[in-house]
Image 1 (cartoon, one colour):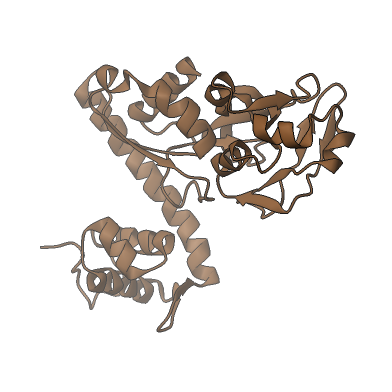
Image 2 (cartoon, rainbow, N blue to C red):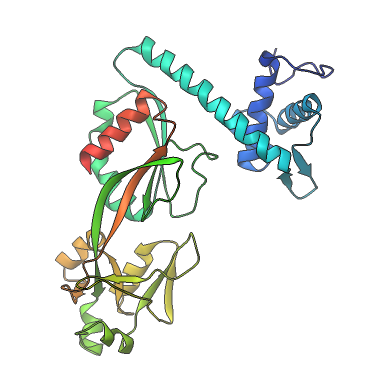
Length: 310
């Protein structure tokens, strides 16, 4: 019998009946709808809805407010989710440890990684060569995007993040402090001249990058001495810094970005770095995972591989 079709009349469900309902509740909370939860669980939306309803009856509490347009967790639903998610993670950890012990030295399983386009496309993905040969039993799912994600709720094992990590529930492993530079196309410099000081940027077109996490313009960082500049410009790029690089190559203005992102363009003469002596401030990238530990040998293997190749 499908465990999603438990006894409708049961007031207090035993663990064997409750667990499928908890899974339905957690996936609905995480995905925001019965339909998306059903897709994740590979059942029908009706089955997920019934499971959540059974759980609500057993608890005597409303976990979601339902309207024709949206499904929103209640305060009790949010509090209950935190407990359920932690319990399910413990169960998954125990199951994975048993599987690892049975399978011997070769780690296996799915590992999900969230990584921004900057570090992902130019650093992480190119360095993953040989991974499959070393770990044929590990399945990788890499989400290369600059969109904000909820690390735990969306089920990621690892994430790469830029800047200072303020989440006390996460472990941050340093992947490197990468210097930045201010770049322009030769065509732009021929038309507008080469700036000789930071103050001279006020007379130039500067391409600003808007951070997806805050919607604010990312300040430019300078060294010797340390200084920040908020670039003022009629041209702004959001979501992906590669767009700013493309605009810079097209001659629309100056753009500050990581040197490792434009190494090829500089080598080919498509971009030129200006004020190299002043623009070497760095930003850090870190590899993140929950403080409660690396939950499987597969995740530990991926972590070690990434840190080895950083």
